[in-house]
Length: 134
Ligand code: NI
Image (cartoon, rainbow, N blue to C red; front, side, top):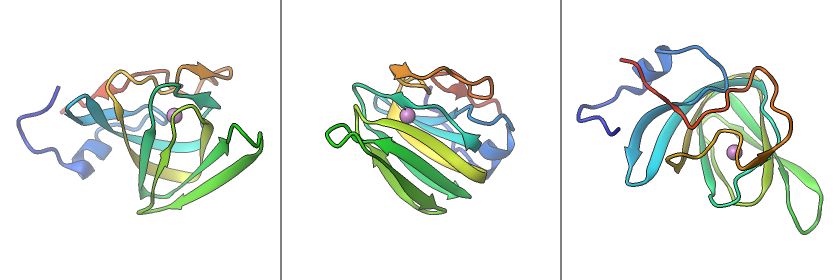
């Protein structure tokens, strides 16, 4: 999976337009570095066995979190240039108020809607990441 050539982030981002449909930029050991274009709501979901790292490349990403002990919800707001890690086992739902580009790092094979999730709306791609077409 790992390319033997450099990968241009702008070129990768301009190679697709689908929303909530991550592309695998490269891999590092057992992890994917994925990029995605997002807008609107994703779906409540949980990754039982892995943390999930987000970096906002452009736009603004909100991540609603249901933190287990309190049962309460909070939302973290990530403007362009901000990073956040959702801990494993925490139910979360990303939301982008405007067209946003994100970089995500998580183990290869991690499903975009996690191990458990609410009903997946039609605009959300259920995927372990697509290969970048060059
Ligand atoms: Ni997630």
